[in-house]
Image 1: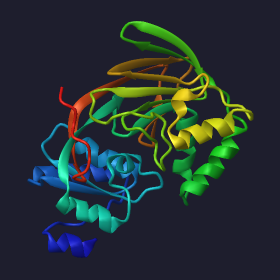
Image 2: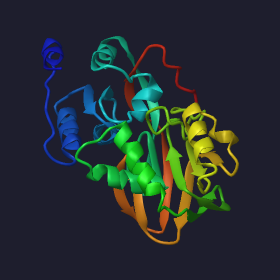
Image 3: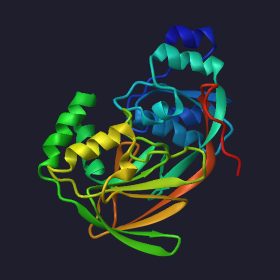
Image 4: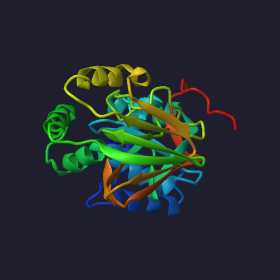
Length: 274
């Protein structure tokens, strides 16, 4: 990493406290940087991208987290060498971003079980996909679905959900496609409400999640839209790209079309014209 940066006249700076990545990205912008590279997981990506959104600067991704949902969706996932090579051979692509209760997100945000798991996962000293699965399995035994009211374009809908995601890409990470068919540049977000999970439907739902077939699951709710208002009975955690915030009883989700430039492979599909 250092050798690559030195070869191309870039500096490598390490973070040492929460929100430091955002500070470093803003500092780089102030000093004329046109490409700012985030090396890390979805949380690091979120901080750096949040500083670049709405600017002409380009985000470079070197994913090294446990999920890497945005990188996988954009075709950036792989070895660090692959991601670094894309900084030279790729092309900037404009993508959408979202706001959840005022917090920016670029891959996915959500309430319910996924926010609870994000909160627990962030407390772990050692992480990884299999630790995530083990922790999720343990939490599942005691989790109860929640009731939500979703308002979209003046229409109100009641739903009981195990977890409720609002996604920008098609997946959480690790190819778990919570919003199959979602596009990251279509000017819309994708609300996915997973029905209450039991020991009978758990395996079929997980299978559909990892094979991109959630749309066919009984009780699954999938809604595209530019804005959603989600109401819940009591305050609780909200995650944005895995970072956890305390949310109230009313949470606003909205899209910011074509608001972030990301260096992507040349084979990435072209952005949708609006």
